[in-house]
Image (tube, rainbow, N blue to C red; front, side, top):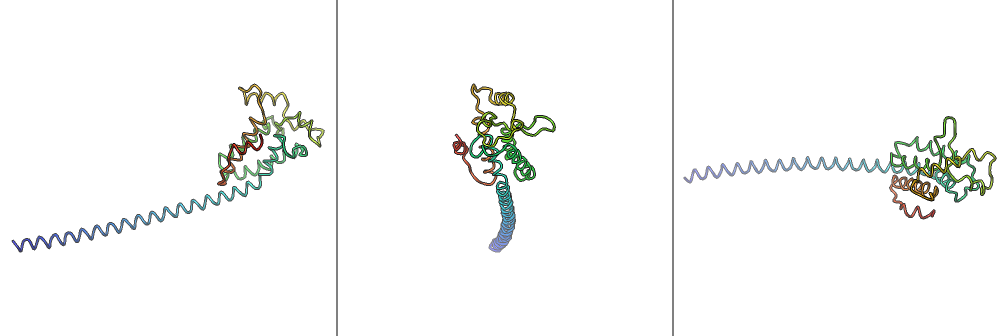
Length: 215
């Protein structure tokens, strides 16, 4: 019996050693596999972060190129700032420059920024007025005629016709008894564009604070 017990003891000792060795090997292999995947994941995250940083840097540079023209378009339609000394032809030129810059950088901006830009441009210009026609400003032509300091002789051709302008505003704000183009159409579009542009380069911009600057 003692010999049998001894044989069983050695058998189980060897078996346990083998199992222990196998478990240790499996754990080592598992740790190596997990470490390899973890390192790969870190590299992927690192590359993604670098890619996002590069995109944000590109957007910031593009924003520098368009910000003056975007603001000039807004000021000329909202009728604040230096609009009295800026001719309507200069505003159209600003639109063409920004259009070109935005379209050329379409893959960099992304859909949210482009949608906000299109809505802003639609708030500032009548763009679908027929073939071989230029965009027309949606700003108030009466105030433009009264206050502009260097009114060109052909200024009216740069503006949306007054009756069509009133109809367009009413269609955009059908529930309003006294609809406001500046406060209810133009300003929200401008604020939305700026907040989307800011978000695209990693900057948080308060819609309410931006809006309050012009109220």
